[in-house]
Length: 526
Image (cartoon, rainbow, N blue to C red):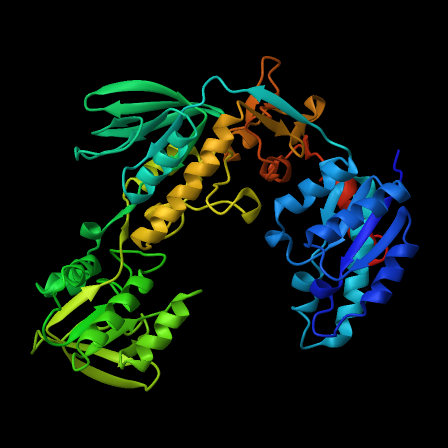
């Protein structure tokens, strides 16, 4: 039986440049059925504020929490974890409603719609949270604490080193024959063939030379990396002087500066047909360009690109490069740069800013893209994790962590995701190794909660759920009906939505709950 819902509204995240009356929103919440406490705070993400909210919840005997903070995708899991532990509240009786992302920002040009939509959204969220079930998780012991790292590049070695420092046994799977100095076991000339099991209890099939071996592990780090040598395109085909950017970095590191004019191009394949890339190594390009201009102010340096992604502190590098006279030229992929057919030392490029076609003389051209590892597709299929259109391994939601994938116990780092510097790759490897080590060292893992469930009487055993689930959670049991392996289920809801017999529902996202929430939002039946 519900004791009551506590509604917490973050003023900073909800006001939206004065478009929303937060106090009126709080009154709407207070008048809603089932609400026993409404609290307006300045910052819901502040630890001290969380403790104050917990005190209020315990005093009002609230057993549910609805918080209106910033975007739900950016909420730190630690916020709810701290709250749940202090308030002794079931973690599945907590919800967030994104007022700023789903109401204020979309209607910033039409302020009259903000307040009524925010109130309707809050009412419907309250109806939903009042119908939630206090779900539970189940524990399973891990058979091993092994951590497997796929790839022995900068990120992979760092991940293995960090996991090994936890006292865990690490195994590095490396397809090359190169000698590797890393802790644990290194398996050269090896590759992942297939994987079975689930988080904490994965069973991998590894091809080592001409043999196949089975390896159990608790956690996996994908650090498959990328390869300059795989970056192909028309620019490389036509120019013998076209080199990957790491050549320039090496020359600078040895105290040698290339002579003559220099062009740093984002990719050897501007159309992206042969060398798809999700991102480019622009931080390294900026570092090289600024270093050359500082040492040799008369050397012409051009940065030719489709998009310049200089984020965070790299913005200072961009500013410095501009001040030092580095020339930035942006082009449209529909009008890609090309080598002058009459003069192989000139690059023809149309500058989008000036709408002018330029002929740039150069002595050396470097490209700043790294081709994704062609093995990524097979790795993604084996581990049942998603891959991006550009060939990189995709990470999961921010709630799982910055280097986590959608599957628990599997992490990704370095250029396995997209091109980045060796320094950043090492930092990501350290993060992935730490998360994998903490996961494996726990010795057990929890699953369940908001997972799918089959009503056997409705199931027609059509295999639709079995064929469509990306995590291979549904299976046909001994009774000839679909069942859900909850250790595998990630609560994505695909099976529930696609089942033609309506035999599957996702806990806390049932048809009755969704119908009631929608009716409340629309102000009546629908």
